[in-house]
Amino acid sequence: MLTGADRMALAAYCECVAQYLDCLRFVAEHGKVIGFRNDKGEVKSSQTVPQQTQALRLLDQIRSLGSEFGLTPSSRSRLSVPAPKKQTIK
Image (cartoon, rainbow, N blue to C red):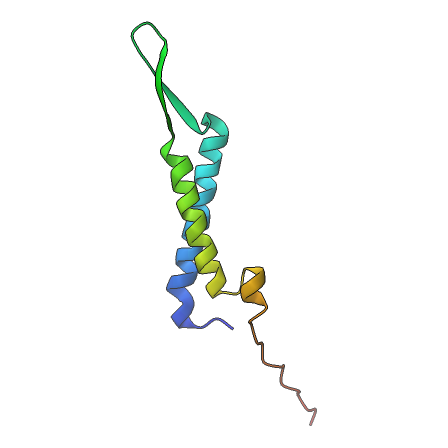
């Protein structure tokens, strides 16, 4: 069902998935929050790591692009696949 015209959108989908997985790995290894300490070692403030925020943005893009390819339950229900052509033996 894909054509050459779909190449860039599919590449964008794949790139978003790869970046999303990278973000998830980072967050799994380092945590979702980073603490900033003063000279005494006390936590002065904290902030969400950028990879956590980026993962959420990428997930939205993945959902949007995935919908274009019928990769979500609701978009899959709207797909119409042509019936395969019957071949005759000669």
